[in-house]
Length: 115
Image (cartoon, rainbow, N blue to C red; front, side, top):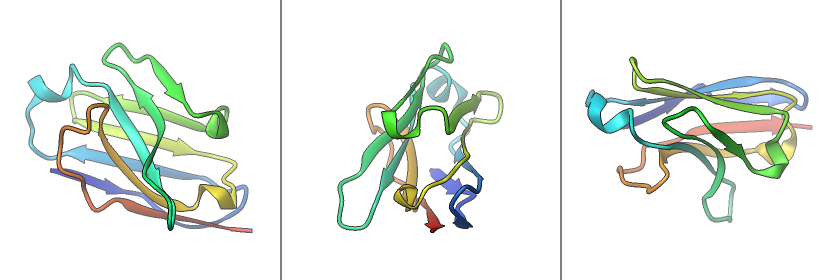
């Protein structure tokens, strides 16, 4: 149900735009939810990176503030993560889900940042 895309291999300082689509096409579920981008680095637990509420309030972990921007398109049931000034420590598989993690996880999208 969740399909993430947009990852890739970039050099430090580069940019990527990640996309996440809820393929179930149930607007009544998507729109009221707070949506979250998570990341999971090798050997580490999955952690929250950024969130966006149904009123477009956003929150970010300190390590990405000023570099990443989360957005959403309710009509298309899409969530985006614009990533700029990428650092090697951003390397991870990125996933999206609701704040409650109420959906089955997608396959994620790999982001690799070389130094």
